[in-house]
Length: 300
Picture 1 (tube, rainbow, N blue to C red):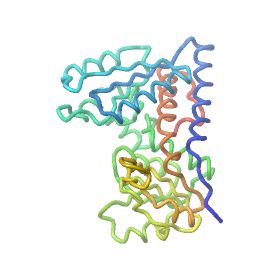
Picture 2 (cartoon, rainbow, N blue to C red; picture 1 turned 120 degrees about the horizontal axis):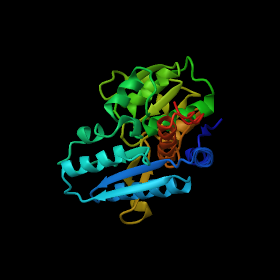
Picture 3 (cartoon, rainbow, N blue to C red; picture 1 turned 30 degrees about the vertical axis):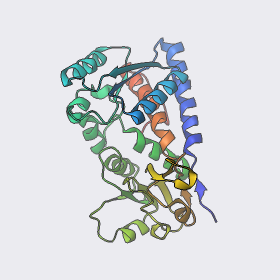
């Protein structure tokens, strides 16, 4: 029986509809419009596309969108001054600094200059610590989206064995914390893991977030397991024409889909959920800032 395809694009559309409903109620009942500010330093093409998409979707759900586009040579002091102004702006509830930053800027310093309560990326050290100790925090968007899809597919995750392949601060580590919070038994696997295939084969849930194209073959997957593929990798595709590329995940989709019970595709799986969860985090931050009830179903 072929695997169920977890349609991240459709799920993200539902999340955006929920967010838009909460935004409407905040406006009508409290006269509050959630505001999201995105800071882009430099002219990285991929970052520019991503920032445009964030701005467009922010406006579509009825929120205020602010963009600060700074020159690649912007000094650290000038960037921190922009963030300080946004921290103090009561109409801005979420702040996101688009990564990567130019090499002369200290990413950790910049991220930790954002007010933790406005850190809708969930990267501030205070939010990392709160998540790690099971307290209320802003949760990184990609892991939050993965958790939402897993909850939607399975209902309760309690007692399931999960393997997270990858130990990044952005996906792997927070994903493991979220799964622990939902009472999974969690293993974080990485490049030094001994007998990685056997570790992965015992998992009811596999989250692949390692950044290596099609690294995980189908014979690593336990029959019926749920596979969440976070990877986004571009491979040359000369058969499609000169300069053309193919977008693939960290798992070999065809062989894994033949074994898994459910799987996210690439593209159209985890990717669309990241911006949807950014919008959800902004609404959550707005509600917390105004001591209002948090939106149900949009938080960890």
